[in-house]
Amino acid sequence: MKYRTVVMYMEIGCFVSCLCGWILVCSTLPTEYWTFSEVGSVVLTTSNYYSNLWRDCISDTTGVSDCKDYPSMLALPAFLHACRALAVCSVITGFFGGVLTLVGMKCTKIGGSEVANARVTFAAGITYLVSGFCGMITYSWWANKLVTEFLDPTFRAQKFEIGAAVFVGWGGSTLLISGATVMTYFSGKEGLPSRSPKRPRRPATYATARTRRTYLLPNTSSRGNMGPPLYYEGRKSRGTRAPTKTSATFNRDSFV
Image 1: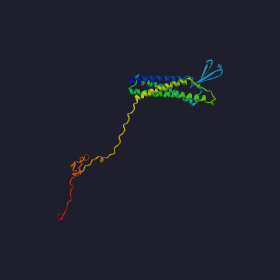
Image 2: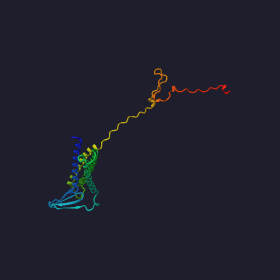
Image 3: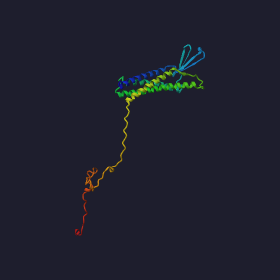
Image 4: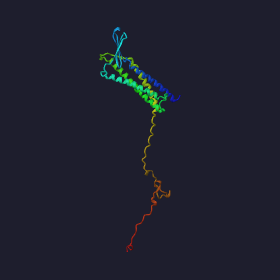
């Protein structure tokens, strides 16, 4: 089996994993069972309290339930606003990650060259990673707050337990992160080639021309009268200099 076929099947598997994780994350937003609490000692008077990011609900043993949205957005704590923003960002980034994956996968043949498709798939993997981490932070932060309040002996308000939606969100975020990690690795290996290592520079030699020259003595009996070296080509050597003019001599008769 060729390497391209293996990568194609790997991309399909990662896309299915990320798609399932994104669907699980989306399914937790309308679900009310983010928190759950059961209050009452008698069966006939038992009430169940549960809530999510948007509303509080209550139900009794007869099966009648009543939900009420939070009355004021500005009166909500900052923790709830942060969880809402992270959950919405997880859904939005997961949607765009799916679109980029459909464009860049090798089996769709929508993009251009192989390198361009790999880069688009790499961008899709990064987007899926952002979606998975946003969801994981949301559910982990929510669960940590519930556990802290439940184990705090000084907390006198109603105590809640972790609902089923948080566990579903954890599973969806895990699928998103695992699938996006594998997709990013293979697509980045193909679309972002590593740079070739630079060759080490040779140490510079500071030898001057004078140290490289070989001087020959003019009156050597063994080598004879050899010409000047190549460095003095076109110049006159000392032995072939033109005779200098002798100074004129004057006597008494030249002035008469």
